[in-house]
Amino acid sequence: MIKVIICGASGKMGGFVARAALEDGNFEIVCGIDKLNCGQQFPIYPSFSDIKEKADVIIDFSNPILLDGMLDYAIKTNTPVVIATTGYTDLEIQKIKNASNKIPVFFTFNMSLGVNLICSLAKKAAGILGNGFDIEIIEKHHNQKIDSPSGTAIMLANAVNSQLGDKMNYEYDRHSKRQKRTKNEIGIHSVRGGTIVGEHDVIFAGHDEVVTISHSAQSKEVFAVGAVRAAKFIYNKNAGLYDMNSIINFE
Image (cartoon, rainbow, N blue to C red; front, side):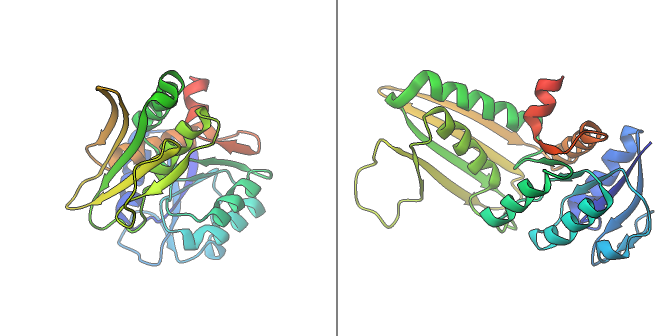
């Protein structure tokens, strides 16, 4: 059995992760980290310094403010970590990358296998369509999401940009500009409303034709299942930075 710690255990995603881990049959949840204890069937601690149990992997669906404590604990105990939290700054992402030099770290902006598939498809489309198509990314999420644009939108933009020599600029909305669209930009737009779980469209608009690559998540459970899958993959791996492409290529 793989012993797991769930960071953000009392949140909605923490609950989904716990259920997905138990349904998988290969995991034992030894404890969770959260300020609140909502009556889970395992111990909940307010911080990593309070943990008494030994674990094989940490799954994190929490808040960026917990990053330093989690990484310190993971490095100190040599525990692999699956990071599924979004909204990190560039400095925090660098901390994650630095930690991967010492422990196995699975980090992605989206835990859905389908999203990572469309990321690969968008990258391939950019290579084929080249500079003859304008590229726009639209992401839609529920009205409680704090960060904007979504980490997934940035992941998609980065994938496309890498195929185009990293020469594209990101244009976040155009309300303050009165000028024509330039060729060296990727437009990124956010929609927040209702209970939309997550929708992403990558639009390639050319002369008299449009190619759209889309993904729609019907529930948050797909992200929990992906995180559990990642935990199973990273268990017993060597130190390094892994993502969903690591799983796709491995399988």
